[in-house]
Amino acid sequence: MSYRLDAFSGIGFDEASLRRAIDEHRGRVRPTLEKLWAYYRNPLEPVGLGDASVRGWYRLAQEAGLPTRVTGRRDSALDDRAAGRREVVIENDIAWRVQTMVDFLFGKPIRVLSTAADADTRARVEGALEAVWEASGGIALLQDVATLGHVYGHVDLHVRLDEDALLSGGTRDPESVAARAIRIEPIDATRGIGIVSRTDYRELDVYVVQVEGEEREQPLTPAPSPEGRGRKARLFGRSGRRERSERETRRVDVVEVIGRGVRQAYEDEVLVDETRSVLLPETLPIAHIQNMSQPLKYSGLGEVESLIPLQDELNTRLSDRASRVTMQSFRMFLAKGIEGFDRVPVGPGALWQTDNMEASIESFGGDAASPSEESHVREIREAMDKVSGVPPLASGVLRARIGNLSSENALRVTLLGLLAKTDRKRVTYGRGIAEASRVVLEALDAAGVVRTRESERGVRVVWASPLPSDEREEVAAAAAKVELGVPEERVLGELGYEATDPVIR
Image 1 (cartoon, rainbow, N blue to C red):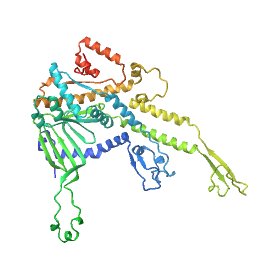
Image 2 (cartoon, rainbow, N blue to C red):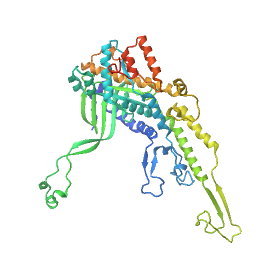
Image 3 (cartoon, helix red, strand yellow):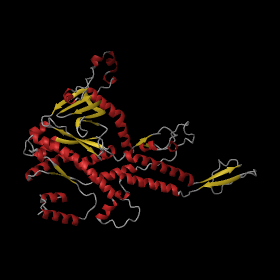
Image 4 (tube, rainbow, N blue to C red):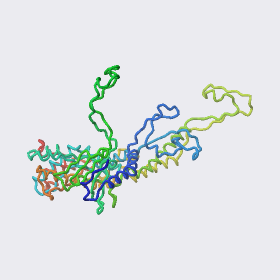
């Protein structure tokens, strides 16, 4: 079996190029990405259900970064200390920091506004785009996109078209047609492979989506009749063999190759579908989003990778502290020369006797403070605050009296680092949203659903403030915008109202 990529021969993309890209992604890129997701998600894996020597019924993904003296999994040739598993403490600081960053970026709905000069064109464009984005998932879609981008460093948006529905939809209800025929889907970095142009790293020649082991349904051939099964059928009858259902599932490797105006789908290297776009013959319907831009690179910078070393150190110190507390929280005894001491519990009224004049009982243990340990753990957390830009205050944790935070300006100063980082991400995510919207408008124009010129397909993303604000201040600012000449419908939209709302006069 082989890939038939004659449709991509014009850009020098052949079967060897595709296999090389898939092999590199499977062997080098995807294992690293899966580790990043494991550290973010930190899933538990049930273990030891049938092994009495294993403490606990689960293991966590972040245990991979703990030293063997804690986990008990060691090579005796490298470490001769006790092989027993100690207390393992995992505090997933990565997850809540990533979730907080996503909340600051897409915690509130955004507005995609047209930059067209004509008011009627703006209204049609904004209505169609809102219908497409809402049909694709709305704010939930954007939060998923942000989560994938924060973990992996980048994420891609694929604009899928039902061209038959677009061409037959007409212009009477463009919003309904757009919502029914267009979908914007996120593609995470573990499945998507961007083939960058040889002349410009910012441009894609081809985009490949590969999924291993995807389930597919297929019809089954009817089971043979009893007459056709011979003597076995006559002996056992129909109950002697379990009849197969009409359909069964099988697992296949799916590869989707997307180019400019052409799309191919393969299952186990067999071409099962090839379509050529009538509406977008020269457009690659992929919008690339970097979480934070990385100069001269296709992939962006994620938030998990830089936190992994500090997360491992934090989990190690917390596990060490748990072991120390366990050892020091109980009074222990060292008995010399007393027979049966190990068989009699230590407690009130217990009596031991011996004729050994050298016998003795010594006690040790008990809790004790460890200032250096507490300081070290605190400094690790502060380092994670600086690396991520997310202080505990952003998630609602107040560690000390930090003054009056009732003012939006006071909160802004306290969260300056996180807000600055969020503004940087608005550039990259906003560019991706604008690019996907441009592809949608180009398809709608080609189908005659919403007519626009190239200059009228620009959009502007309006972001809501992630900080709590005073409604009176918002209304006063809106009134000032109207006095400056900003269209009323735009000002009402920023406040969350529509011009058709009955409460608006």
